[in-house]
Image 1 (tube, helix red, strand yellow):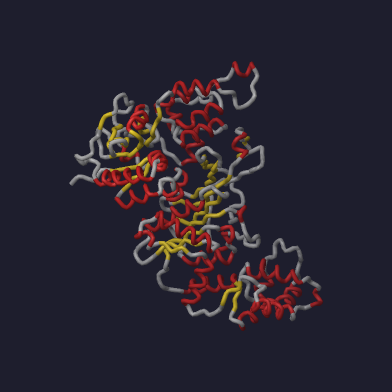
Image 2: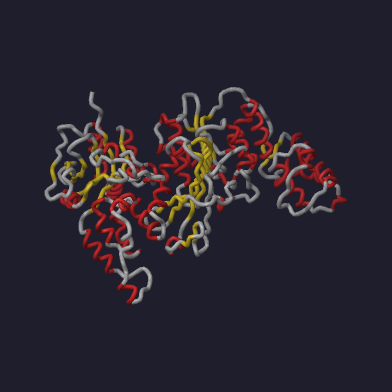
Length: 591
């Protein structure tokens, strides 16, 4: 029994499809569904393209005016939809394209061969990125002269473009070649030009280049993270329709290789991903939830995806509907944490309502009654009690006078003796009593008590894993509750957040003190974002990288070893430039 051929779509195909009129898109989709079901059908007439550099590129008829360009190798069962256009334009596009496998990385790469030499010559004619004297211009030499062919290909440079890359002598010329290069090649060259070694780039990517690559095995090449960043395997009509119905929603289909490594595979413990706005953290989290639901969630259990705000939870749920199949969605539960706590309390017949605003009628009255019992001889301002409640008592889950006597009060500014703590505590005790009489409960107290209930439950946990977005806004009690939702173990917790986007400054927590152990490798991650940029005391030579960048850090315990990753996403009109850096860690315990 022969296996069904693999059918894949390229990212370029979807981008081109999005430019076409809706009526044409409908024709293409109808044809693509038939093609996906059986690309070997006698009804599909593969025509050779006269003058094409790649004999494996074939033309297929969609209707009288429109043609698709398909990669159909002479051996193997891989078919790739690469392009669609009017008859003549489609043929011209195909003449100078070539689909190859990088002989070092094993990645599948679509190379544009047209006018490569002219492009390099034009790039050399461009003004230098930095002002240069006549003497320096005379001594200008290629940027990558010290690298041999294998080094260049290990960075991702296609074999057919090695010669052109060797001619690059400035950052400006490298930028001029960017459209011709796969994203990993441009990023790798960019980093080497900035001062990294090839080994540093490969180590950061966790890319192996010591294996023998079969440059004719396109089925294997399709499985690499680099290939998956620009090609997607379509395994059914439903998947084909979903992808082609929204060709511009690239986030659903293509992940950068670094994102892909965060999303896929087993982790021996909690993972934390940090990054600025727009770096794709939530996309990574959604794909991670999908992978866990599809590969590591047994029947009867789910992956919980939780966030701080209800609006984000609603958005994520809608996006997951476009990302996941019906079967996968049944294994994912999306709820913001407060909604989850509310549902848990109702299910366990806990009738207390949660206080989110102490100025509400019942809570305000309870606080006024508590303040009435304060010891005025202490001469502490009223706001001291509010801040002490939030930053010490609630944040640390303190419920007894003995615990308060020994509580840490770092950063509070006012030193308190044991006698003063004894005099202050009745205010907090009275406040909780007043709330309880009104069937109210502070949110941190609710988190703490629900976590305690989960800790004594003996039944099988509802969740196989928990994915958490907006981590920066969860305080210590919230993190302890999340820890209690799922047993510690493989793939248990996946945190995503950005400390610079914290809504409430009081919600700062050391994960290690909440039972969440995230460890980096020997040596840790550091970055300073103010120019001049330095990594481990080594200057960052490329001024462009300083101008606009955000950071994504992944702190994770992998199944093989503990590692600390820092991933850089440069935000600009260029394709994302992700970077993984093994550096010294900074503030590794902060969410």
